Amino acid sequence: MSSESLRLFKKSVDGAYRSFSAKYGDAIEAVFDPVLYFLVWFEKLLHNSPWPLVILALLALVYLGSRSIYLTIGSLFAFLFIGYFGMWDDTMSTVSIIGVCTALTIGFGIPVGILMSGSDRARAMITPILDIMQTMPSFVYLIPVVMLLGIGKIPGLLAVIIYAIPPVIRLTDLGIREVNKEVLEAADAFGANRMQKLFRVQLPLALPTIFAGINQTIMMALAMVVIASMIGVKGLGQPVLKAITNQYFTMGLLNGLAIVALAIIFDRVSQSYGKRMQQHRAGANE
Amino acid sequence: MSEVKIKIEKLYKIFGPRAKEYTDKVKSGIDKDELLAKYNHVLGLDNINLDIKEQSIQVVMGLSGSGKSTLIRHINRLIEPTEGTVLVDGEDITKLNKADLLEFRRNKTGMVFQRFALFPHHNILDNVQFGLSIKNLDRSESKDKAMYWIEKVGLTGFENKFPNQLSGGMQQRVGLARALAIDPDILLMDEAFSALDPLIRTDMQDQLLDLQKNLKKTIIFITHDLDEALKLGDRIAILNGGKLVQDGNAEEILLNPADEYVSNFVKDVNRIKVLKIGSIMNIDGNMNESNPSVMVDESIENCLPTMLESESGLNVLDNDKNFVGVISKNNIAEILRRSKD
Image 1 (cartoon, helix red, strand yellow):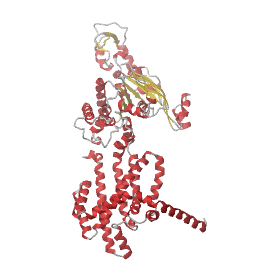
Image 2 (spheres, one colour):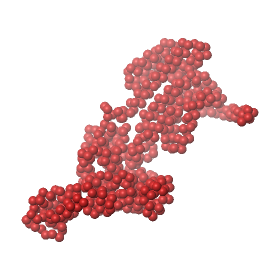
Image 3 (cartoon, chains in turn blue, purple):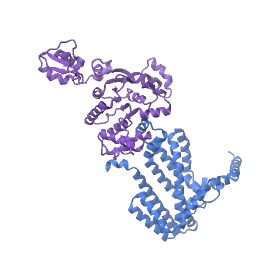
């Protein structure tokens, strides 16, 4: 391609996209309004509630998820450390965006994974898209998202979701495909229809694998908070970004440690919850 | 007893993307190996015709790859036939639409699998209840039924355990209870006892025969074990390379094997243990008061001591103690000689 026509090509694609986003940007933004409202509401709830109450609620969740008193005590110290070093508000912003993001990836990713597991054609179509989502540098897809929706929470949320959703889709697909064929045949032999097979046999048996996917997704979402902060997502990413640009080593380190603490808590809780769901597999060793 | 419950007619199954096109080739006589070599299609079943009588145990026997598991899956249509019909109570299963097929499977057939195929995430109670819950039966009613069958197969007290906490034999009892819980007319047992060790297997066979005395289900039992077939089967169908080579009762199979394949199969069977006195007695003989008597459905083996003590022969009596025939030492000697060949 000559440099002239390449320039023309880029210009025309950019122009077309620009006019598309000028025309439909508002409408598309409106689609995401409910999500935005919820995100804002959730963030405000975490910010405005008295912190001991929030810690108590978080610890309760940690305990319910992990049933581990050590992890709960560890989490208590982590949250106290975060508060003591003045990172409470940022942490709550991050928790809220990660929470909403996880809910959305699960809500969207699991159905897509189910679809993929049921049809080889769907799988052949979706797999390369997931590959692109996982390997494309996130800045590249941030450009059109920001062009379309501007700077703010929703584009940030979208960026995080695009990056973080592939594992949950892939592992839902894998988990369902790995369900023992003989067990499925038994379900067929007893006259189970598709929905009964899905909800009574396939999903329950795939759940541990799906949970590994959810765990991955949360970890990847946390890894995205710094990049998301570049397009205006509040949270622990912003001070890290500020620390990079101003060479504030301690500030970067403290906020980085807070992200690590959150990651470890999310990881351990979701893993031990996933493990408890496969108790029937360990049954013989009881 | 003699009503035909399942009638399989001209059933063909060819595995492969262009199965339909090759049925004519199969009909014109090309066999399993040739079809695979020339056209890369696998011949599963080749013109199967079989009547299965109500309340009987029909054993289907063959080596692996003979098509027996394929055949049993046509009765509840887990496998679609390439051609032919399967009539159950006169209704053609191969013509059922999706919804009717689900109803058929939910109510008419229960299946027991070689490797148990229990639901690992359900406890024993929920496993046994599975078929009932698929039918959306009332929860307490289905629990009662499930508990009844758990008790019947001797697993009371285990209902809250998970399958992998039980031994193989116990797991297969769960499989049996799960199949029986929906109270099907037809019980499909696909090598149900093959994965169990010999003692447990004998135990399960006895239990099945014991249950069948009261249940009177139509049972299709797949096995590759001839001893099991002879023990359980009212009739035994033998498959080879997708073809039905012989269908008959134990005596017919043992005394008149249809071809070399069958005679090889029955070669090592202990005939005097399996054959009943009735199958070798002489009905023209006259009662000899001085000889001892044996029952007509006794095995030859069990009569040997009496025979050796007797002077010339034995009188054979039926269950009502009526004289039905005689048996001489020569009759038995001949059977013993034949088993040697």
